[in-house]
Length: 173
Length: 173
Image (cartoon, rainbow over all chains, first blue to last red; front, side, top):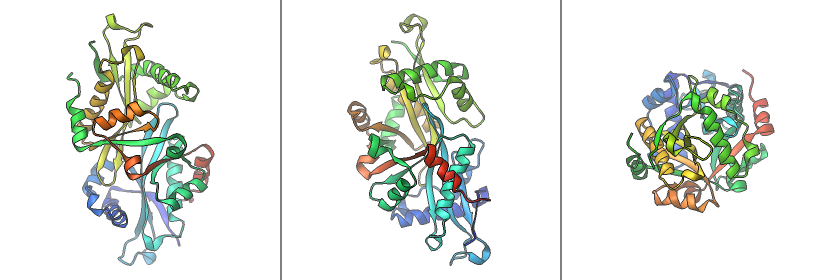
């Protein structure tokens, strides 16, 4: 199937938001999505954007059952290692179920790697759930390291009350 | 002890680089530091900076044995969740050994939380090694979640050859 991968435009945010929700439904977590397309527009298309996004577009004659021509996306941002410098982090990778098996997912991931490399990133990083064996096997086949398994890195998160508590302890200027 | 936490300036990069190396020596990984102060200047003080940094400064009369007045730093950047929006990620937190026990580390972390909150971040995230029990206990005491333990999230990294392989597979435009 012919498809094109291109940088997302501000006008694509409604469609990206639709796919974010589809991905969350698939993960049975749709009630967790608190971000609207207006917030994606604000955060991804401002002067210092918080993320970048690639989308996959298919020709009109290959549109989805519901009539969509944007059928996949990869959302990523830049992170920094004080040892190695710039990295790119792949937050979301999604392809609509009826378009899977056409190399779109691999294409999106490779394009993110290419964008990162052009920006002098020395790493592409992402996170995966331990029970998601197909994804973990796929990354391993591609030569990725699992740093949680090999080095014991754990993700820590402060949010809600624990984040507010930290803020309230901040020294006064 | 009196100390001040402030945003790092470009001129602080030489001192920040010195502390990055001290932290790596402490971790017995000093050969891993490939980033110089020139690269910190370039990446942290450009139009779309890859990171931000806070430093802790002590008065001249409290300077370190070697004569340093910058005695700690917190280096962080912004990440993005397609469910929840903006987050802040604390990459490095360091206080010189002779200045520990004065609340500088907690002060730096709280200040990063405060900066993040002002930027409408809903999370502060970081990573910790599983054998670093004091740090893990500290974060737990402060109400943080360990997402690797509770949900099974693993860190995946492509770099070197595996990153180049991805790039080489990218679809041509």
